[in-house]
Image 1: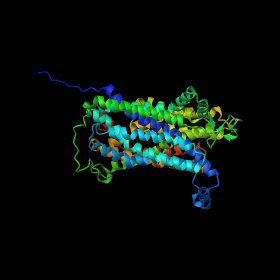
Image 2 (image 1 turned 60 degrees about the vertical axis):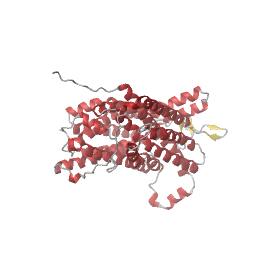
Image 3 (image 1 turned 30 degrees about the vertical axis):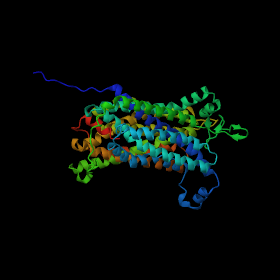
Image 4 (image 1 turned 30 degrees about the horizontal axis):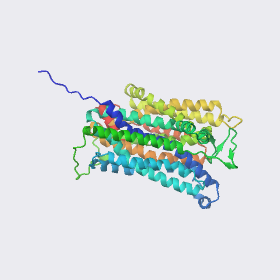
Length: 511
């Protein structure tokens, strides 16, 4: 009798609709990480330049001389990572226990996302207040509220896909979700240009022109010669509200699509009938590294690999909150255009994802990671050398050789980061083997999330020590990558594994 084969197929249309939730999430983060550092830097620069109690306190205590604008801005930009580690797991588990007409996840998303978008829209409004101290106080209040509400709905929105997708198809579905998230991120990179165009069409020509303008350290609009452009004798500032409002509207529309999808397709929710056993609260016993049933040499490789991951991610996480300020202060490029430069880096990284995987299989994971690290260290070193040795043009603009070195570093650097990112998780999982996929995934994300907190702060400290010269962001990153390269060279395991590619993709979804 012929065997009946029932092959499951992914419903791509349904998965794409689910992906709109993650798309909205990544859209908000993309704009937040690009523009908030610029606004914070302008306000804190004004504070540091003035005569106030805060500055007097720092000046009266020599041990605080290391405190700088860059350090404070980068410290603020780690709030999202800190909140993510603390609150996201809690609300993710809480959504597992939720029962409502909108299922497990939608109540958190539908209620908290619009509130989150509202706080998001208030950030640039708070930045328009002239009194720097009051403006910073209001901005910090709104930023904290935004990050907290984001922490409430981010885990539930990521969990919608597994709720509607059989386990056998979740890896393919996750690829679709990540593509949708990438689309959201790319839209965020170009949203400034879109907002400027929309403002012009609606008749707000002055706001549209300001978004395209160059600014000084205080966020004041200047001409090509860095002279202030005055109106009625007063300096003019860029109002980023249109960028944030357009972003918030698009993000809310993404959630409307997700809500409409759920109402039409809730019969496919596989989690609707799944009960919850409150006795163990869904927690699994944590396994300490010293108690793992692997050899001493494998434990050493694991510790070394986790250390290298921490170092590598200190560098990658430092680039995100500093690039727009680097472009603004060093290249004199407006934020709405500097985000387009980051888009080039992101596209290069994405396009090299598959080749990086092939290299990992043919050349070996460790060698591919080391190759990526070596390449990006060289690229950053070349840029640093060119930017510091070759003089600027007579008008203060960056010379063409520095521009060329930067573009080469962005394009080739994106591909190099792809070589690193694609192969690090599989290498870590291979050390533990099939039985400890979940445990080793936890180790992996502990190392990377920790770096997401320390990286921006350490980079901000370096930038401050070099008189707020954001070129030294690349020095910091090159050093971290170089040390990471030296450390990862000592890893002796992780090349062979009995873990399938399917299981590795499943582990990656724990992020």
